[in-house]
Length: 412
Image (cartoon, rainbow, N blue to C red; front, side, top):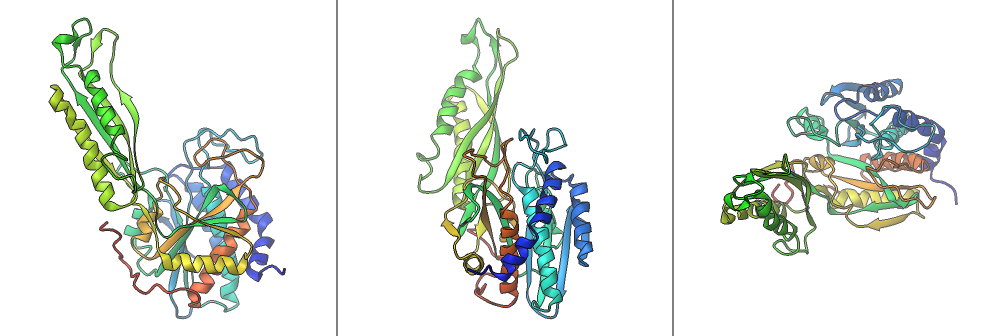
């Protein structure tokens, strides 16, 4: 079977894309510090003759292609790495100690640069009319001291104001090359962090009867926290409450005055999100019936990623057109967080997961120190993004009627 023209052109870029990805992987940068990554991206876009805006949301880069009249579509890639020490013994291993591209953002950035090159050629050949924005976003992984990641800042600075639709992809280490995963509706989770304290009076460990021991009160609180999902919140809704930190005590002969507890709350629907937060606070309030008290603080993170069906329909048709033998899996991506969810609350959009698993029998999870990818996925991702843009600008295979800008998802 003859390879689709866009897939063929993307495949011709493979060696270049691998080189870019490995250079980015070897020099990872943390959230809001993607200075050299941004310089590399901006220069690559300028070399294509593209209009480029830098310093968006501090370190973000936006490229723009435009010709004639037509709609505007945005493609988004995240650029930041994680505070993880890489364990891979490869030539492109991270050279920045304690920092690693363990979530595939190096690949996302590379793939979008590949799509930028392919679409620049398409615009020169007059095969597209309209506008494409190439959004290279900082800080998807970790928020700043205001609790915000890169996406909301880019939105605040107007990056999506003239955009009709937005598309992104993500590495999928649980599927091999030649597989894609898509899902309509909620696909990744609301992310909230809770901080609570169980407060007692403390005292001498030899005389526990003279104090209100917060460690004694901790037991019922933990039991209650662990009973929320599936007991007080329906198991029919995806949700998680996980306790991840418990801190207390200073000496073996001192009963502390308080125990500090932190953890994460994950959910899809907004109603469930609010119910979970309420139930977590109720668990801490049990301390008052035991002679103690509590404090409770919630940090609201990124919203659940909502994929619009119209954009997924377009993606499915594009993938079938250029890669007819690919396996398509339809399922939510899990309860991880993804700040692309901010963007699909503003304009219709979707994210798909692209198979990248190395076929060597070793499972490599996202955010793990041995994460790596099969680089055959790089030209595939570039081809899918490129062809999706072409179809969108030509009005083929999709309709976003009823999915206007500023769409409100589940009361959010």
